[in-house]
Every structure is written in structure tokens, then in C-alpha cells.
Length: 103
Image (cartoon, rainbow, N blue to C red; front, side, top):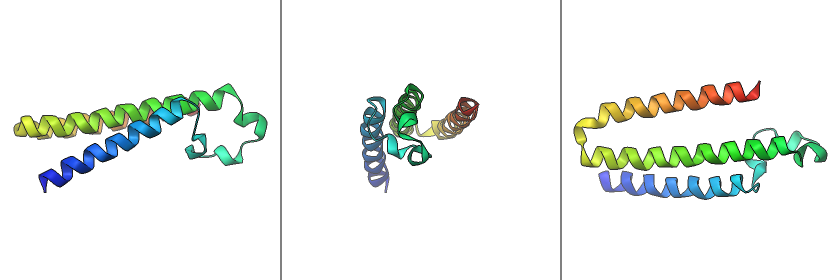
């Protein structure tokens, strides 16, 4: 079961990194919520590309945290509660950052 979880984590992290690269480069912006409702002029704006870059960077951070958490728990099994707290805190920081970015 541990091997399956580790492999799944690395595959998902790789997927997040690939999607993050595309978003940072300004591709796949359709994945961002509300993109299809924008006018053509708004879709070409720098603000949409900036949101894509931020979303891409966020995916990089999530991928890194996923891999780091698996590696840390494998090396130091006693650190599992600390890893869970760090992951929860990073999730809260991401939600708060997205909330303030909308304003």
C-alpha cells in the first residue's frame, strides 16, 4: 500500500508540474474558472496571464509539498503529524492568497 501511495503521489506531482509549466507559459488558461465567460479582449489581457502564472506557481508549490511530504514521512515516520500540520497550513495560506488576489 505504501508503494502504491508513493507512486501515485509522484505521478500526480508530475501532472501538476506539467500543468504548471503550461499555465506559466500562458497555455491551458481555459482551465481557470470563469475564463470562458470572458470577452476576447479580456482573454488577451495581461491580468489573465498573471492569474495563469500564479496558478502555475501554485501547482509547482503543491507538487513540491506532495513529494516532500512523502519523502519526509518515509525517512522519518515519527514526523507524520508535523507533515500533516504543514500541509494543512500551506493549504490555508493558498486559500487566503486566492481570496485576497480576487479583491
